[in-house]
Length: 431
Image 1 (tube, helix red, strand yellow):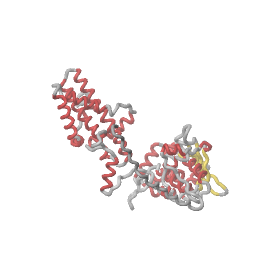
Image 2 (cartoon, helix red, strand yellow):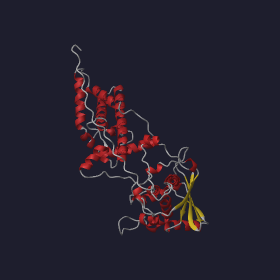
Image 3 (tube, one colour):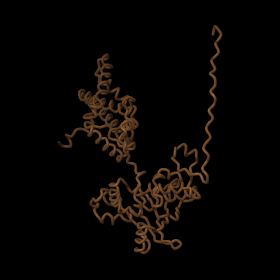
Image 4 (cartoon, one colour):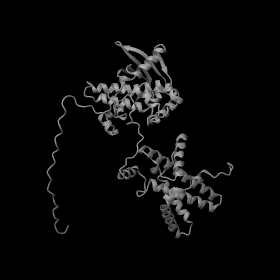
């Protein structure tokens, strides 16, 4: 078949396979309703079907998306149609469900509009049979769209799937990296560049380990963003009161007038194999060097980490966990000051941003060489959100523990005594 003989794109969006079976009942009911409405007028039932289609499309207004976003939507949508499953059946996490739901809603609505536009062209050309066939296909797909995303009785929701799994004693699988704790810096290279199965062959052996050893050590020690790693990181061997140190200069990735730091510098004690290896690498190159990372390096490292259900960003969550544990530790003398330092270390300009990284319970509690000092170009602009702002955004905060003795338990609330019901007075006769 040549390109000229290929069917139009809308012809490939026909409701078929598993989707056709799933919507057979609602489609038949909608068709019967349109036929009954058209019985008295003597006009084709497809005119009433098109009215139903237009009414459904009013709930799905057209919107413009970027070409890259549209390509992702279409890829997800085509996979769902090929498998014949709903977006809810294919979704594995709430975020995955939202992605598939959005892609499906958008593509189904656009395909309905394509069918209707093709029908209108056929009608203007005088081909009424083709116009009716195209209107029927648009109506069928519109009914499916309405059933999945609008009708209360059949609408797809993640809550329904979560409840069904709970009744079976199952929990929805999660792909979140926030609670996945990567190995400590000194174990990162050995643990992550080889297969998770015991005794398995190495992943491209020593070549991969040698390629990414310095990057892994840097990620584990500083928790920097992947984009910051790809911007180039300056590492210097230095000393502080006779202690060997690493001075790590990071160019901020998320920087504008309200957030981030253009540059932040971390002073990390060169204790442990990972930090000592980076210091030795700096000394071998004259005391300072810039660790460069290309897109190919980043993809290669992320693929190696993915075998262990981790990513480069997992180390950032690990640093967040350790900083949360440090801030909320009763031994920390000035938690407010500690929160400011933690914000600088993470590259944030707000102390509240740390709430979205890691968990206090996930801290390794001592498995990381200490960070002795942090400086940032916009350190004087670090702010704390007002309570009203936090409530409006519903931000999960890092709470500071009380110092000294534990606070007394709250007094029980006094329940008001029940009041006697006041019955209305009877009205005089005649009212």
